[in-house]
Image (cartoon, rainbow, N blue to C red):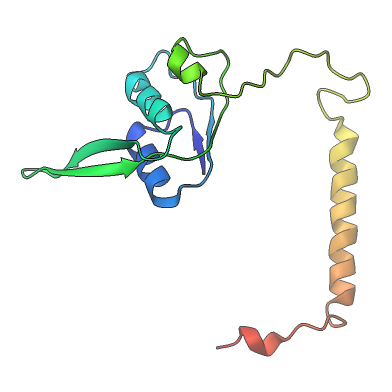
Length: 143
């Protein structure tokens, strides 16, 4: 489940509760946002089975709902979090420490895009030429 750092807290705990897949948060720098405390609580609570986030829903009559926020999480940030409890729940991989390889350009040269287009066109032509030779059961897709 991919989510950007600008995602609000409400859909995060709902989607985790619904799917329990791996949550991937990109640019999860919550340090200067109003959602910091709530998001950190979800991340702190979601490392262990059986801990839920409680929320109330409704307009005039509020109903309490429990959301299970346990799931694996991959979080990309620019810096570490100040919350030591949260940091203790992470396996940290710092990127950008090693020097870059000289044989891989930072920006792709213009000829790359021309070569990619030529290759895509060759592959498309191969598909056109071999379409009828394929053994697709086209009747299975009808009706």
